[in-house]
Length: 631
Image 1 (cartoon, rainbow, N blue to C red):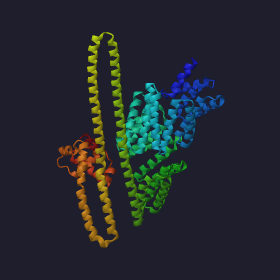
Image 2: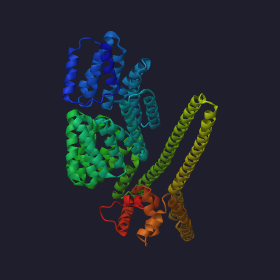
Image 3: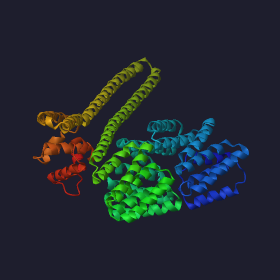
Image 4: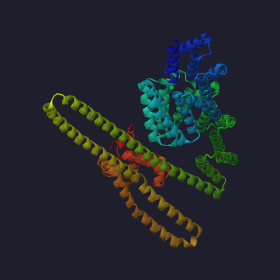
């Protein structure tokens, strides 16, 4: 009986119990712990269950239970207590964002689980180690571990409930990894898989995690209202389970989305709540972030005195916790306040300090905005040569960022293609297995019928042969269809890549050549007439090269089912420029990306979108992107 009870408890822990967190359940566990005198495996599992239920709502109490597990190991050498105690101490430091300490304890736990062949414990450790690699920017390593975990789960976890739970956790982690890489399509695909699995097993806390992550992705895609909806659903779940850390983080997320929507009062209310909760539970990372966003709201309202006070608090906390990105953001915001108050020298001093921290920390992509603002300050100080220098530096970094994004998009398409290819191969293998099973059944039936006599055998064997021949013919046709679909998918991907890159390359080449000629004119005014003619020739050449737009348009039409003709049926007088803008929107490019490809300001793109929506007679409630995607 004792062994059965121990096995039952171990299954509950190791499979990461889905029991609803509530005070009665926790109190019953504490009562069991108080009455348990023996330092044995059952006591370790009770301590583990208490830790699992309190690790977010009461981290310090949960840490105490982890220490008790290690004390049991010291007393009687129980390996289970050693592995779980170190795992739970790693969890404690990981939730406090102290990754070096977390890795130390996780590695000890991993060695213990490997030694004792604890597959599920190993899955837990690998999961969190991969999360740490992800936070350190080692995305390749993290994705490798997450995918290895998926294989381990499907090999060793037999129970349907727990297989769904573990797979959901892995898909959620993979989605998070792709989100941070900027591969938003893959991030959304994996996050939705996780959400569906958690809904099927009614796993509330993890469903909240999936909803919050989808909210992050929608925010990156600039779908702010959809993002807000997901965040609110996640917050409701976290509150019901009293997951304090996630309540704080999600409250801050909601405040930021309201700020981006321009609903400043709602934003202020949520951010103040996040600040109060962060102070109460000593979560400094969220506190610094919420204070920064609150300071930005006060800046929008032009209450610079209050904004400076809040931002200084954010800076102090960030410097104490060595949070470089938050420090940079604080100094940049304080510099802007000095600039708005016409104290340009102080503004320059602060922005220079922010730039120096950015260079030391290696956050090079953040330099673009800092250089751009420094250029603005220098212009106000009439230091125009220096201003132009930093403006150019900012533009170079922006060009580099755009190139990185294009490479990421191509890599994302490759990954999607490889995934679809793998799924097609699996489907084909399954079909072949079915065929082999049918053939085996037919062989067995043939042997059974053989004993009934030669005449019956000949008749039935003939029928079976005919049927088998027809089945082979049918299977051959199915395989040919699969191969044709496969070829069409390859052709589709090639066309899509061509449609995304062709015109951009032509335009960027022209602009670079035009810049070089303008620089020659600037340096040698006496060459103006000669170089002016060359500029005219370049512009004519670009006009001719705009024929490449026709090539691009033909590719795009094939991929997107004669999109331009459909637009013309809606509005016959639509111009080529408007068709080009509509095509880029149909490809789900952001405003910044379209501006870069057309070499105009983002504001110009927004105005063009407004004019296009008006020309297409769309009302205010109709989303332009959704309408174009429906054509």
